[in-house]
Image (cartoon, rainbow over all chains, first blue to last red; front, side):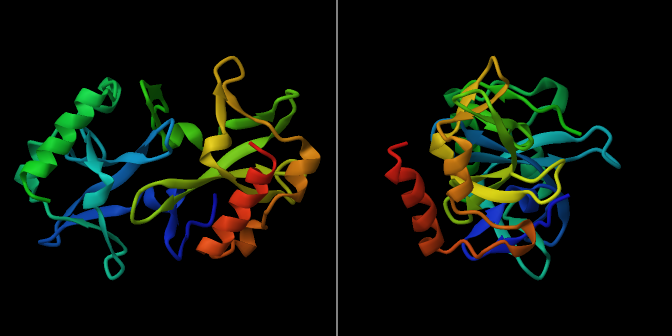
Length: 118
Length: 118
């Protein structure tokens, strides 16, 4: 196991993965499970939130634009401006049914969050 | 454990981490240990190669620019145009002595690889 860390203006993927995600009301939504990276550019397109279910059963994956994640040092987690109902309606998938991340899928994800002026 | 995958033009960080890295001569150099991500932009600045040592003892970490990693499906790994001697002289650190990834450090890393016209 690596020593996860964040230093200066970079953060390691080890540190991001597993980090809790809260909404602005302080409710825990889930945790970051994975990052989806553009192969060519190396840009993180989505941080994938594991959300829903109970004790890890029946959870789904919610791709979030990187830009909506704000790190809160007091919480040692990310805070996103989404209540659970809004998140519930966001694009998501079961882990066994991961979609192909086409540009169209990306547009769908980004539009969902853009429309809410995040 | 997640199902690592690569689909279309994105790849998951789970899939990248642990992937073997070879040079063009086919020698295994090591494996990707971690990714260093710009907090603001979400851009992967470096893929961190674990290299050197023996059976995981005494290995060091070598930050590689994302752009020099070329995925080879036949090898199921990345291929980089670096022989071991060149890599040995590249910027690196012990895991317990991870530097702060300042812009200056980034310049040092990128210059090392740029000078070799990679």
